[in-house]
Length: 122
Image (tube, rainbow, N blue to C red; front, side):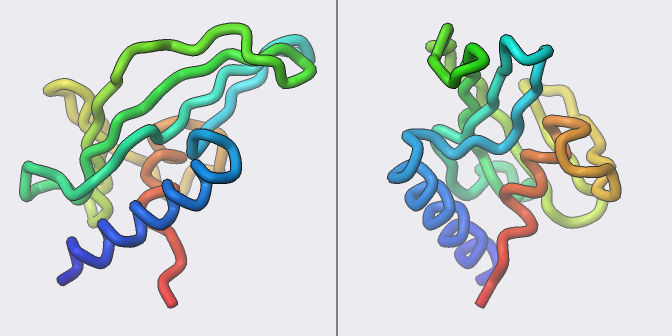
């Protein structure tokens, strides 16, 4: 039941953010006032590996200071996310621990975890 609820939350979050902006941005890194790079959720669903909660596809976009897209990566960067302790993000076969106490914006893996695992439930 927990996996179904999490999947519904992910779907609703991606659908609402996609309708508003095209992609669900979960992390942005700024490089001065002239450039930023955003990571977005393009797809997501329940994880195939039972040790994880979500499998997602991440996209990368670069913007100029005015918000114009300079580059959109056409690659499909797959990741798996575990919400429960120990929080973790898996990229390819490498597992990365997530410091859930880190401040928002400090690490893209923490921001990905937060976007998926801390969605409000009503």
